[in-house]
Image (cartoon, rainbow, N blue to C red):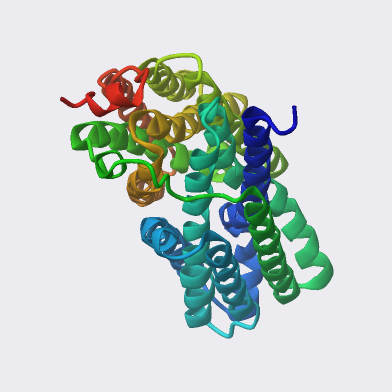
Length: 402
């Protein structure tokens, strides 16, 4: 039985999922960047605005890495490319560990760490979709959940390590972890014999664009990410604005992050069972209910529930988006389409979250931002209904836009 095609496929799929876990958890600590703010400001004499620029640079180069990833894995073998990604990101973290000013942080954390992480992330998704076809929604949801999981696990570890060993030693430890995890993942990929492209696929399958479908999915993802990233980036501040004490805000923030990670898995699982437009519409309506509840009954407890609902709506969309790509496009096109869709995430990160911060400075509250988030999710629900039902075959998928 162990020599059957099915058992071999499951074994290869397990190896690829293990590799994705090894890579994405340490890179996901980019979402735990806030842990470094105060110690880095104290060490280097920097302000919060400068630190915000460093995180923005990392987000931008993470997206750039995703965009150039497909061109790289088509030209170079995946195993050495994954090792190079680990080496680039680790070297960036070592530059941060020895940093003397913002220039070193921008180069090390912003450019190198972000770039290596982006390429590795899109490689993991492409390799997964070349290996696993059954239950691909659940598998894709799991892979995209690893980034918030990495932040959830990394934040307390970083806090303890900084207190025990100092900031520079903590960054050095993260560099060693990233390089080691990439090396282990490379060995797993070598054992699984992952192919990044199906050589038997036609050029039409691999290069199909479906621009109308892409634009609709892009909009649905962007609108969910705008509200969700507002929550992820300012959760503690929002909770405190609605009356939460510091300890309650910290606990609430951790809970919300964990809920988002679970929702990403859930979004992938749901589209294995229900049509994509129904799941996407429901996800936006869940997020919309969160804003409405908080605006109607403001308070710290309701703020936790509200932001959990908004975050879960974003998480469901993140998980289903990865699975939807696998249904609407050929596996050879997955990395290219996914990398272009993730531009929506980058734009979302500098839209509503920034606007919400500006509105808070003007009003000392988040009510206006919540009203905007409600409108964003309502529009997202309507856009979601325009998506086609999940195609039953590749031929149907190719004809969706015809």
